[in-house]
Image (cartoon, rainbow, N blue to C red; front, side, top):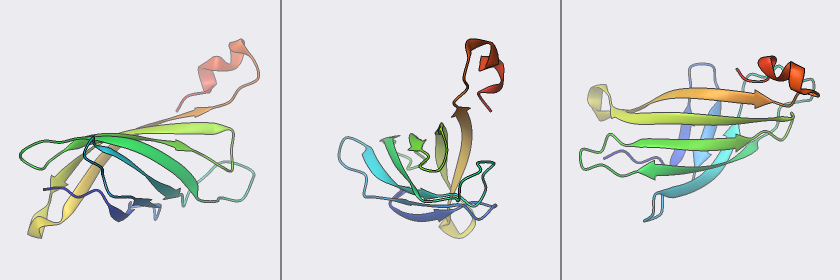
Length: 111
């Protein structure tokens, strides 16, 4: 069974801490990014998410981060897998939406 609560780290050194997932699948936490193109210093940012419970324990989940050091928001969609030695591995895809000043600039706002 995948347990999302606790600390997680990715290959770039970014870390997140998630609270205990409640009975509805909701959780919250904080993301500590190791990478940013923002001009301001990186600071921890809040996240909120929801997990889909599954009997085999390899759950899907998603979360949103409200970046405190930039005018952007990121959404992540993920699945937890039991890796070698029963280590839990999160496979994640994300989109980042940066603020732009005009509709014609919309094309460059999402990565």
